[in-house]
Length: 140
Image (cartoon, rainbow, N blue to C red; front, side, top):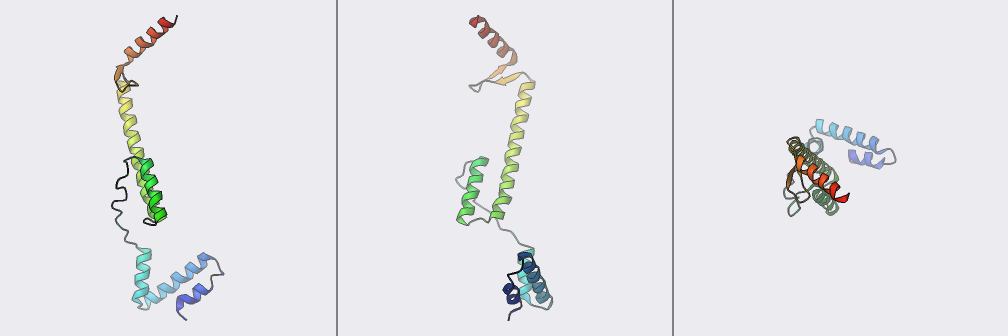
C-alpha cells in the first residue's frame, strides 16, 4: 500500500491529524530522495502565486464593482476564495486611500473658506452665511 494511502484510510480521525500524518510521510519520502514528494511539498509550502491579470477588465473603477467582480470570479472558479480574499484586501486598502485623499482635499478646501455647493460650485463661507441670512429675512 502507498505510504499516503494508509493515512487517507484513517479519515475517521480529525482532519488535522490526517494532514499532520500526510506532511510527516511526505517529508520522510522527500528526505529519502523521492523527488515527487519534494516537488509536492515545495509547491504546497512555497507556492509561486500567479499573475491575476485582467480580472477587472470592463469593471468600473470603484470598490463595489470590483468586489462584485471578485465574487463572480470565485463563483466561476477562475479565482480561489483565498486569491479573491487577497485581492479584496488590496481593493479595500485602495478604497480607503481614496477616501482619505478626498477627505484631506475637502478639509483643505474648508480651511481656506470654500464650501462645495450642491451644483458643484465653490462658495465662500461668507457667501453661505449671507445666503442663509437672506432666506431667514424673507421667511419673516
